[in-house]
Image (cartoon, rainbow, N blue to C red; front, side, top):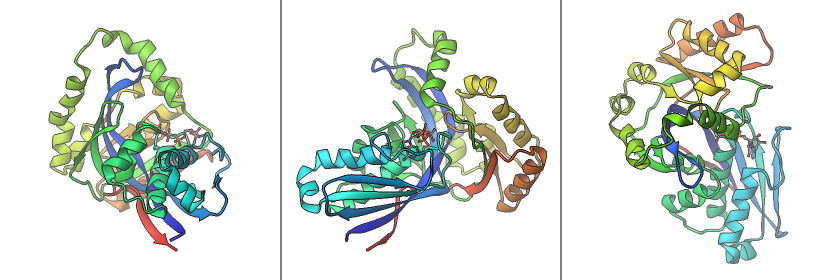
Length: 316
Ligand code: ATP
């Protein structure tokens, strides 16, 4: 095969707790990550020149080495030089549907798709843990994006414990097109403002692992959408909501709609999501929010929880 098309789903954070500062400069996190139906399509082709090329339909996404998908291909070429020499270069086309810099792991899921696609193109036969380990060197969210579904993530977000899949909880996502929140800014600001509360803490991993016995994990195990929605949590809301009044307003508008089980910002934002029992309720609330906030800059999507990460849809 010389070409694979892959679906690369976005994620939301049902839970994000910042436990403390790690010696390696990252934060120790306790998260619950959930794949959603909103996805990019990634096409990976073998080409005869020994180069890596990236195309993307979204003007804000770089196509040079700063693209995480490019870096994933470069990593594979470095790790597997013989296969790179044998099969030649790689051309990557990204059809972007996931909003950029939105807290939805758009770049990370693209990188995960490239790892999976090149593994297939070059017939490497890597296992899922091997792909996740490679992904972890590119970014903290990449390992989760490989297998997707529902998982607890601790450490930098790269230590995964799968949870039973949550299928068919419906979601409305809201994101202002022109609003981007830098993930490093959000964590740095959190550390500056709230770092004192955890500066002297030790045994970070044990404290992060406490999430396993927490109320939201019990709700996920029970597949109780209402209870999950009551237990949504994101520490980064403490810094992003005060700095971005539009995000706060969107969250409040969501919270006041009938049928909304719960609402929260995803990751470092600025995307806000709301959970619903049914697609019909989600679609109705999308229309109501569109009427309540008349702003062409606001994009709204209806999607749902899904049970997979990167998925191959065709090969030629
Ligand atoms: P996360 O939730 O993992 O923090 P995010 O959803 O907030 O990620 P991305 O969409 O991954 O953010 O984009 C963050 C930045 O990375 C953007 O400003 C963009 O320029 C850059 N970037 C690099 N590669 C990609 C890619 N393949 N898709 C989207 N953005 C990319």
